Amino acid sequence: MKLTFLGTGTSTGVPQIRCTCPVCTSSDPRDNRLRCAAMIETHGKRLLIDCGPDFREQMLRFQKPEDGIDALLVTHSHYDHTGGIDDLRPYYGDHAQGFPIYCSEDVAGDLATRLPYCFPARHYPGAPILHLNVIESGQSFLIGDVESKNAPAIYPFRVMHGKLPILGFRIGNLTYITDCKTLPDESLNAIAGKTDTLVINALFDNRTLDREHPTHMNLTQALDLIEKIRPRRTFLIHMGHRIGLHHATVATLPPSVTLAYDGLTVEIPE
Image (cartoon, rainbow, N blue to C red; front, side):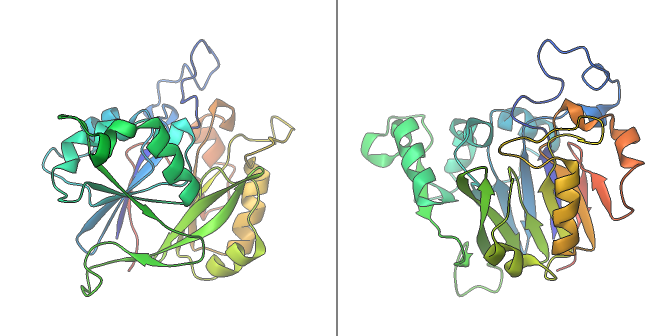
């Protein structure tokens, strides 16, 4: 399995508009972060996790023109995770029923309201055709032919984004969590000790900015949760400019934890 980080930044991206802090003015490309998204390649399938407003740039920067996308998995409907869905139009022609999106029922309702022109009943030429597949926390699903050995099983689980329930995904040995403030016990039990590679959010380094955020974990909270999940290695995402300079913050982390950065590709054992 191969994981490519298409974006690792929070909703504002980094650099943040009108900010002149050391991170936002850094010449290190690892400090320049598009909004969060990832590409998973496994058993011949290419799965996109979230499709934010930087999707077009991410595809041009990190993907080959000939590469397709088999499906989109959506964690939740906030703009920084869904604002690029209209740009899926170069890919929908590969799918007879429309481009497949897997999401919770509330996200499906939000997308149908925001993008009514993307559904066959209201479609006009040139617009992407979307096919919504409603999934539920705790119920695994397959993408592609269910009889095929190449169809990866995906396990969605509940994550609390403040008071908003959203989804994380476990795909084989990979667990992907974003926008988490807390993790319910049943979700923790479903991934603890079963995760080789963990991807999880850490909005800022509270060791230099001693405060909490109402809907996101800070670095200390993320490290505490990582200890409970017990992965072999962890990549931090959904970071703002207050996470600190990449090279400086990485030097303070445990050996098995690091900051992800845009364009980073890692191999994950099947």
